Length: 363
Image (cartoon, rainbow, N blue to C red; front, side, top):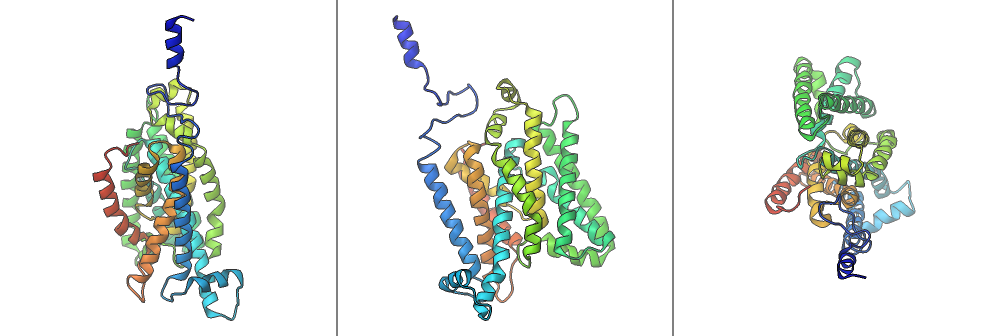
């Protein structure tokens, strides 16, 4: 064997390693898909479990964890404390589902749009859901949360489809810039239409503003179960798009060169985003900052690999939502501050800190 052949063999990268400039990051087994990241993910799951327990125990009527455990394992209908715990279960489950959906959707949305400030608003999801709910209240007299769900979901899905179709016009298809511009334009138009209805009907405004602030209080099992199929379908789609998002992060031209069908990949991922955002917004209202802050935060632990960003977002986003909801229950006793307000109050300074500190936490 010649010296040149030996040198070439010595420089040949091992299977599974990442060579800069050759495609999306493909991590060697044992380096990135294990070790510290897996440990951090396990720690995040433990934190989420503790917050779920705290959500059952903390409120206007505080309960010890021993009572919570007893209520879950040996429920006594005659025990008032046990009844309180069971009344908080749907709220906690909704926090887990809506938070996980917003975290996944936010991470995937930032990957699809290649925009670090992407959130449900960039595809017009919140505006579409809000206008549909207002229309349902004003035209059809809908007054229950279970009725809001279907209007909000349809409105969110329709708005996202319209944004994607508008951005797809032209030679280059749905580029990140066109998606952002189409979403911003549709947001402005839909919110203007919504305000026209609200200023003309005080009754509609009174009903709508309870849902608009966002929160997980006052929901029951009928509300949670009605959105569960859509949440499950959206989560399955998005969790399977990690490699797709890694390719799209390199740019459309490189993704095409790697064999990726960019239009189809973006459409499939957008479908999952619509299912998640539409369902979460319908169930909990337009909760802000969860889908924006969490993907930024997890990149400090995961780097730019979406195969890790997505599961971390799935776990840490409901932790943020439950934490905000717990704080909202006790900060102004005997009243409550809705979780949608608390996530903004908690998330805004954290997001500013992340932006100022995280020069390397890019897409």
